[in-house]
Amino acid sequence: MNHLDTLIIGAGMAGLTAARLLTHRSESLALVDKGRGVGGRVATRRWGDARADHGAACFRLQGETQKLWNDIYPGLSLQDAPHELDPGAWTCPAGMSALPKAMAQDLPVELQQSIETVERKDEIWIARSKEGKIWTAHKILITSPLWQTADFFKTTQPQLGLEIQDLARLVEYEPQWTLIIKLPSPSQSLGAVYQKNPHPDIASLYDQGRKGLPHAAGLWVLHASQGFSATHLEADPSWVMDRMMTALRSLGWKLENAEAQAHRWRYARVKKPLGRSFVTFASAPGLYLAGDFCLGSQVELAAQSGWAAADAL
Image (tube, rainbow, N blue to C red; front, side, top):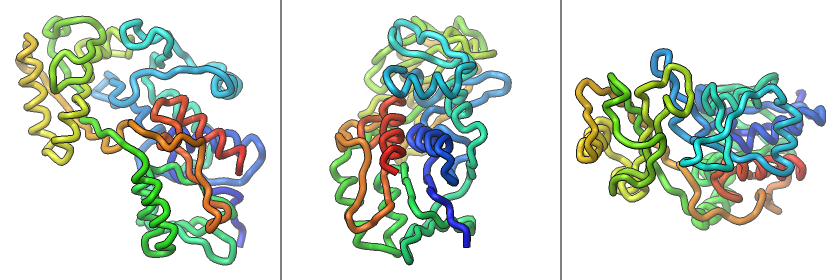
């Protein structure tokens, strides 16, 4: 049987960065993700012809990570982020998802594959998905949130699963509810392109039209506050939308005929990371863990974690 050199689980920024580096070094690999697209929270949602960045709003480039991206994607269109958002950051005019999509070009990505179990037999790693696919590899890099990763080993290698759970307890995640709000007229909103903490239940409001996204006039992204998101993590999306619209009305917004969509990010950002670039286990040769839980949830830090893991691999 032919085995992959490396299987990478998770096509967020850590997994994509690692895959690009390993591909350049002529390693055979597969990149697997449960989502319909790559990038994780570096996400853009379509609403008709319009687009809204409902995950990460911008990113920074510097050092080795900037060199990597510049070498691989010299044609990727970037622009300065609005000063109110982050004067030292970048955005993608076509939407933030343009960055991971560019990174995924020509990579062997398999989407909508939810990993169910991972185990090591005869020095080979075997991963199985709920959809019935099986991958075998000499090495495996997992970039999922740690609690999800621990579940992969719960029945196959329970002691390893417990070790990963112990690591997960050291990391603090913050969830976040996000709304995309479509106004019939852009003039129905109030305020600048980016507003921070305008209401106790709202962390930020971001005008997608003034950000420069195509056909996005009148489209806003609302990030709920951490307190609200944690308290109402399991709430019904329609209830969350009603609550947020009420908050906007209290700020003077006119919301007649406005529409909204809600999205819950269960692991939106890492409040307390592990403080190391990647994780290995003496009891599990060839297993590497990387992702935002290592260094932090910023786009660049996740990429740095993937870079470091690829070097170690």
